[in-house]
Length: 265
Image (cartoon, rainbow, N blue to C red):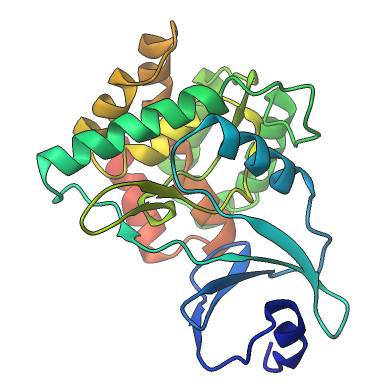
């Protein structure tokens, strides 16, 4: 996308600065004038309206900073999502203990409300047994390029996972989507494009990428009777997450090394 003149009509301001983030799997991100985020799907498809509906509900029920999204149409007819820039930097384990504890409390309260959202009110994709069976079939296409023990490990891993499909989840709560202000006051939560009905543990698997200690702090502010079960499934889902990189990038040296590391630890 090189011509942004169509966007000025939506912004009602001239475009003076554009920064590009091309690291996402599903979307290309543009920061416009340090004030706006433009999220462009890599494949031309309609933007699901459920994301905007859910964000409106969560804004009323939670205290974290959330994007106010708007679906726009590019000059060539592609739907894209536009929302206000939320300031901050990706949350890090090196932040002060006080800031991490405050961020964890806000995130635990946010997830309590998100995971209580009605699964019947929103038309969202489901990550159930059928989803994971299809996922494994896609992975098997790479078996000829993988060491035999990696293929055997993969079969064992999937056979031991019993999918839980009970909850509306964010689906991609890795550090890049958790923003901390400086000085810290309010946590920002970004990019709901992977939200689905599935296992609440998947959100904690993303949070665990900050650190296990931070995940435990979040769990301490999370209201659920399933905390111990969630902890157990986080370990499994963290292992499965590497296979999304396999499907996206193929069996490159990093993916193979990480799979071998998983087998030996």
